[in-house]
Image (cartoon, rainbow, N blue to C red; front, side, top):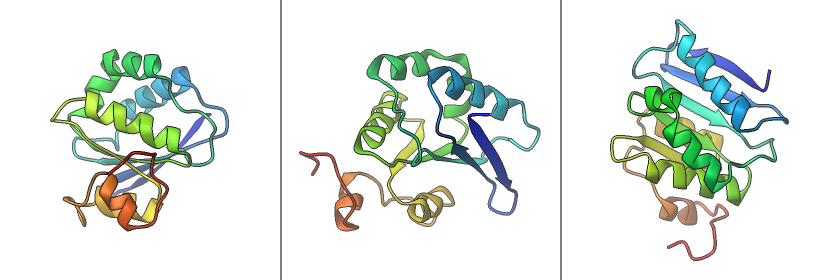
Length: 144
């Protein structure tokens, strides 16, 4: 399986760890698997860890995700934190987040601990590129 799922019922979070071989198809399949799991109820936060993979969706793939019924079934009902390992992953997650609309609660991160804190509500207002500059993370050129 391209993704491993681990539920934390105390924090109402699911940790989704990507393996080395993922693509758009396996990502959509993982979303379907998540939706079909009885432990995955409204309000459960999703922490997606893609640090160990080389894949990042293209802009065309981001638009395919946005049009997917499975994405629409998830996006408005769950906070989603994506932990990126590369700037392109961070950037494409940001594109996905911004194109998903105002109801979407999606944020890219470089640090797992920071993503987990945001997901559980510890730092709800601490979002955007400035957060990463302040923490010394790598930020795409031109970010404020």
